[in-house]
Length: 545
Ligand SMILES: Cc1cc2nc3c(=O)[nH]c(=O)nc-3n(C[C@H](O)[C@H](O)[C@H](O)COP(=O)(O)OP(=O)(O)OC[C@H]3O[C@@H](n4cnc5c(N)ncnc54)[C@H](O)[C@@H]3O)c2cc1C
Ligand code: FES
Image (cartoon, rainbow, N blue to C red):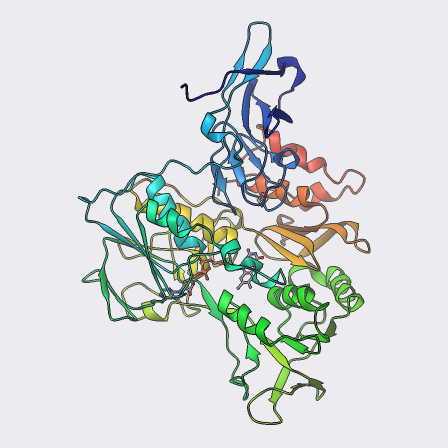
């Protein structure tokens, strides 16, 4: 039987314009996108493999389409995933145009009834004795392992994972009330077996010897490597406050932490989250309706004001208060008090107020897990991060670093090094490290992107840089706004939104094309989306980064 179905007539060539995306049914169960660009027509799957968003609502750039929900990016010719989150690619559908201008499309039988396609993976060759060792079992390592196989590497791949579970997406931990580990897992055990990716669970790297190319492990095993990828992620920062070791004090970094927190929450629980960052804000908004009270303690005047300024901060503060979360601003936790010396019962703030507390979450930032690297030849910065070049190489040959621990060049930050702790960046690092470790050359070229969720509403941000000016479009009261943040020179450094996802996705794509946005271009409130036309403009000069 042929690999393909018969061609199906879809529409007339004249029914689709250049730079237009249209969704069609291939048959009852399969939808696809028809995309016309440079007078050629392409067809790829219509559903984002990440979490199922309809890609017809995405943003079309030059040669790729970016999903409007979390920014994953797909090549319009092949359907290959180019930027993340998400792991899989889109099916692509061969297109034929008949002499009388009829557009016909056919599908591969194996793609029917599927919205995702795994890129071709090479098989392990037992005669190839090289070991590529990936330290850390997060998204960066998992993506690196897959990429190695996709890039033709056939030696051994070993992932050393400190946690007891297969690599998973940890971002839902603070966003959903009940999470099941299997639902968060990036790939199944069978997948890793099938592609000969060895995973050692519950074992940590404790020492790196770059002379013998050996990693010593917490189970006394020594693993020799030919190439090494360091992606050990972050752990919650600790406070020196007395009482931090009480039984009902938690932090939230992994699934085990979440299970521990959930096991002590009751409808009568008073929860205190100290720290006003994303984890506190997300978790408190997720949990408020399930327990008696939630109090967030933050040293800032308004939530996230350092990122988005006072106006947005004030709106967020009101939102949290409207929804019943107590917000103790411009204060810090000073004492953790206990009636019995075993459990927290109260928390005292620096301004002398006391609050009842049954469960305390400490969320005051994270530190990189690189202590085990410090005595090696790989330089570790004072903040625990590791510098890399554009290919994620460290200064030591054959050693790469990525994800939360990497101080790596950022495209939208003139390729200056920054440690950007976003899920999408970590995954992208995994891909770039994998490509380069496999012997191909690819430089970093991504725009940092992340999404947060407060009370079930999605807040997106793309870009990175300093804040000098802030420009807000939309209606803050209704929480439908876009905020443009610009630096001293008026360059927009990052854009964030609640309710206008396409603005952030378009900005992300614009920067990815090497273009820039100036504050003056977003000043016209009567035509707030005019700047988006530059996305498909090939004449615009590219920046030098
Ligand atoms: C609750 C929560 C919510 C988040 N939400 C978002 C979000 O909405 N959007 C976003 O962009 N980002 C979010 N993040 C951040 C995002 O998850 C990280 O940026 C991303 O997971 C980093 O990936 P990584 O692979 O570098 O490291 P990690 O995912 O941290 O994985 C590192 C792994 O290495 C293991 N490890 C550590 N030390 C060793 C060692 N010595 N030997 C072996 N293994 C070791 C760790 O146990 C861990 O399993 C969130 C993080 C948390 C904790
Ligand atoms: S659903 Fe498309 S990127 Fe998440």
